[in-house]
Length: 374
Ligand SMILES: *[C@@H]1O[C@H](CO)[C@@H](O)[C@H](O)[C@H]1NC(C)=O
Ligand SMILES: *[C@@H]1O[C@H](CO)[C@@H](O)[C@H](O)[C@H]1NC(C)=O
Image (tube, rainbow, N blue to C red):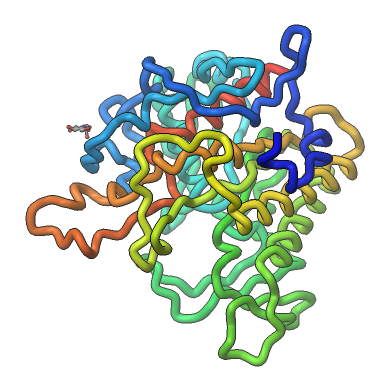
């Protein structure tokens, strides 16, 4: 495991992700992508829940090699998600996916898998469709998407086109009411956060500004991204471990982007056509830093949680996601980006979100496997 030797093997052993497999133990999160001819679990033609920015098929992505890979942990297999079994086991339950747009990406995958059994009804959405809820009537199963990109309270001054009139203001010691207010209704929670912490932001604590990230124009103390990430996670985990209501919580680890030759705003692209082999992804100092922070905070939270088995779960998908530079939407975040008349030089790439179908299905396969351990 030389590749990850520098990022804390102690934490890997602390995690609650190992499952007995015959004589040995298998870490579901350590492995590689192998060729698989069976193809995706659904397509753009069979699922109505794929939103345009993730709908690489409908948007005209010409290659389909990215659909023929399967996550293969060393030492075991992860069988495909079983929608009917899942719904039967979760009768009457409420699942919530809490976090940023990667959770939105994830909920679409889950909806596509589950809607093969029953078409759900949307029963709620907020004004901007960032928070939504669906109900599967035959199973009385509820699935919520809860927008809370920083997990802590954040005032964001950004319009629908992503134009911001001022930097976000985060309050470290107050959690985002969007998820806290519904907490007692959740039976299972998938929670995560991510790249929003890279943005310029002002930070407050106990009602006062304590610093800022990336604000050279202000005479404020610089707050590092790993500090703010850690601080927000700690606050979220403190709530999760001390709340009287105790749903099963999956913390999903860092979902890396794969921009090459620039960032999203400076011509960065992700044109690779195959997964990375283990170690091929390179050092990734920043991604590794965030991954290290979240695993350390998770380990502390799990230790504080009173030892209840399988209550706090680490959905440690970082490594498998890191190996998929080929599966982001890239230019196919938009319909026919290279159609005649389009300005090919101006096409923006999304190398953060994932094509659907795509590698997120493997996250769901693993969740199914982890539920089976109960
Ligand atoms: C699905 O994508 C294919 C191209 O991969 C396209 O021809 C077809 O029209 C799309 N179907 C729907 C329902 O969008
Ligand atoms: C459906 O599930 C909810 C909990 O999610 C529960 O409160 C309600 O009583 C259930 N309804 C039926 C008809 O079983």
